[in-house]
Length: 473
Image: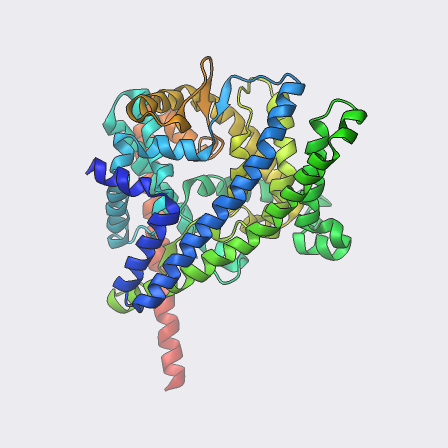
């Protein structure tokens, strides 16, 4: 079974997800041709997103490496990027069985009405495998690894439920969809707290700066495309140590600017393919569940956050945070992680932040700044355990993507910087049974409260339908 799941995961998201959605579409009653079309659009969306992020990495990576060498920046945690983190997660005993285990947990929670999210974002199950793998190698216990992964899954489903209404209200055409990805979910509580705090500061509560407003006020200067070009030019200039060298490297600097602008322009266009591919599946799934299962009204389909990373505010704030994150990583006391390869994952910090900040660029930037500062420390703290897992996978598979240079630990901004992962790790490894008790207590309390809300919501919907029927009569 481990070999079977390794083979399936090895196909990659661009192949695995179209197959899954095509089969799922046929099973829920969509015409085979329409199901295949939806699945292929999802696959094309993943490929397009991979191409765009590869463009960002290939353009920005050498420039950032040049800056590191020029200014002698040397930190001891090597940035492996999210592909290496996913490879480590899936190539462990936890990762081999994470999909069936999590699906079973999801079904149990649906039957007990402790969640209303049907999580079909199977590719991103690697996040749950990641925390399970890290705990597994740090504790040398497979049981602790699965315990951590399952706790993470339960909490993520509940956060997806809690944020679903705001998510659907903020983003257009997202009715019946939630985001059960733990990297995004881990930042939602921080977004709520920081947004509330900012609203209490005089002046800031009336400061309305959204991406669309920037376009109207500043014209071209407020466009993500133009901001991408400007940031690219600035990074290109930083790779040179004199004005004369800047003049000599004008073609390279201009090329970097255009490539960064292209990334900002292409990401929203690629995400349209995800929406076109996933919407028919989502609508048909909700319709089927509503017909077949009593009291299933209000269920949400768990989808990838890739659906919404093309929002203008996400693009603008991510772009602004890239140079800021590099500066902070260097000057932050105690931090040993310099994010380079992971910067392409910056966009995924914000899908569940924007609904709380209402797309306000300033508030979103502040939230992003806070979570990035905390995230750098978390990556540094988790690096030794991540390194144990990565080196074991490298010895077993020979995968060069997970190789760590001598004298370094490994790390990744994607999910290793999530407060959800860090808290679960600390409770499982450092607090042991006390920590396990706390995690179980929090999870049970959250499920109990979520069940109350679900039942209350379903009663309200039943009453509303009854009132509408009576009025028609």
